[in-house]
Image 1: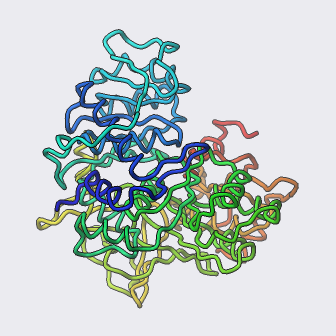
Image 2: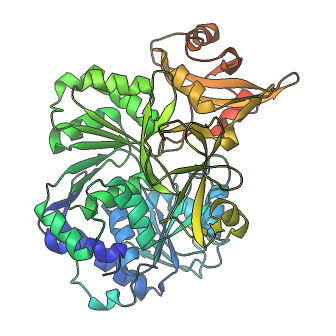
Amino acid sequence: MTLNLATLFEAVAAAVPGRPALVCGDRRLTFAELDRRADTVAHRLRAAGIAPGEHVGVHMLNGAEYVETLLGCLKARAVPVNVNYRYTDRELRHIYTDAELAGLVVDAEFAPAAARVAGDCPALRHVAVVGTDGGSAAWPPRIDVTAYEADECEPDPSLREGRSADDRYVLYTGGTTGLPKGVVWRHEDFYMAAVRGGNPYGDPHLTAESLAEAAREGFALSYLLTMPLMHGAAAYTLLMALFTGSTTILMRRFDPVEALGLIDREKPVIVAVVGDAIARPLADAIRAHGSRHDLSSFKVLGSGGAILSRSVQEEFAELVPGLHIANGFGASESGVDGSISVGEDGLMRLAAGPRVTVIDTDMKPIPPGSDEVGYVARSGHVPLGYHNDPVKTARTFPVIDGRRWSILGDMARVEADGTVVVLGRGSGCINSGGEKVFPEEVEQALKSHPAVMDALVAGVPDDRFGERVAAVVELRPGTSATADDLRAHCRAHLAGYKLPALVAFTPVVRSPSGKADYRWAERVLTGETPTA
């Protein structure tokens, strides 16, 4: 049996049909109900002329419709494309055209923005609007616009025709350091790297039948997803839950106090977040309101897409005794690569393992114990490349001696025992008088100060040193700290040249999923964007 994502889901749904699959607000769907509704989406896509291999944008908030559409695309062999719902018209135009969308499923509140750019997307010919018939938006006449419908229908064996492990899944990056890029995965590679890669119970000899059997006989967990499904880490977690027969609880938009109510009511075992931007407000909510809620089901805090700082982990250890914290490390370009630990020295360490290699500029592995700094890389089940970008594909996904690699932007070195010390993104590295400073290390030190809610670090031009370290800092409500206070605090953790010479105090802007927006931070620090 080939590892096709649609076929794997259908096998699990058939094995646990009555088990709860999805909870979002008042909507509750069993696996059988979700499977039938996804079948309806697949039928409607085919009826609208969407052919296998064509791209369909998923431009929605979290909800049952998002999951139905994602699965419906996979069933119809269409390629789902995640769309950031906070994009401006310019950014939407880029992703719609770059992805060559033939179809689009969009929430009614985003339909006017979608309609404004649709005329510039020559491939787009079918739109389904969730919540309205789309009449309030001025769509180009050539585009067929319908109301979204996903009533349950019976399975159609014809939808299985032609499925293979080579069917495509496209995941667009957050675009926080440049324009978003579409990472093109084969289904099998995506499952093995991003879904099974985060599942410690993965079967090395997996078939759809063995996956279904494991779901039927195994212990069903439940996940609360606090982040938007259009983020890669959320998609990984959603599919991991579905393929293990577990229940996924969705928040339409993240609200930390609402999250406590969901934990109390729905009893999730795992709460999934994206780094400190979601975890820290959740910790503050537990501290302020936790005594009013039963949080006893909450056993695991899982983060993906951004690293949890040591200070936030210590807060959760205090607030939720016995909590296990999974600090995931991975990327849209590699899947799930392992779990990060943050030491007292502020360094981020990734345990030695077969998934990750640190290579030099000649693509040779760096030996353990070397002081040489290289790039984190992965081979085996990695993406095919970036959609419509052969130049960046050749750089990020080179094929060497017949083997395809994914070269991540993260720089690292290897300790004597094989542990990988992840230093940070090479593109964000600050060169101050010849000394290299990685923003992530400075951010970890800043966020360990009790008054700091969030921080982003970037380099700003300097006549003497070329660049100097600067930071945008958001303080916790009701607290105060000066730039000198923060520098004095960081001096215990960092060398002098790593201390932020400039500090701008303003609320930190991140993507809706909690990922850093370093372009915004640079604009604030250079005065292009005024502080609040």
